[in-house]
Length: 121
Image (cartoon, rainbow, N blue to C red; front, side, top):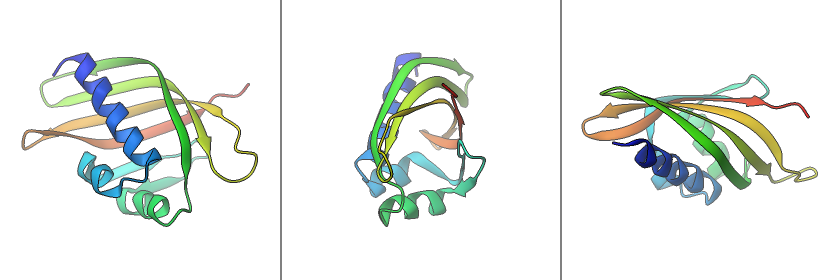
């Protein structure tokens, strides 16, 4: 895959999360996926997707900035600034640095790790 393909895959993954398309999101995240949140919390794939499915975590928007891609034969890293908007509270957009690790598994690229670091204004 080329860098543009990984960027398209990341857009597909994040839009599945925004649209609460759990079937697509589950298919794009490895079973052992882990998210480290801007607040330092850690969620497994099931914890993360369950929160989204139950409406406890609702993304109203997820805009990717310029994405840097580093890749090998069976692993790729993506890093970008994102503007996220969550439901609840003031529903104000905020920015994070987002880093994602993808691995090639049986011909499919899956997200295995994500880390979001809050950008202080």
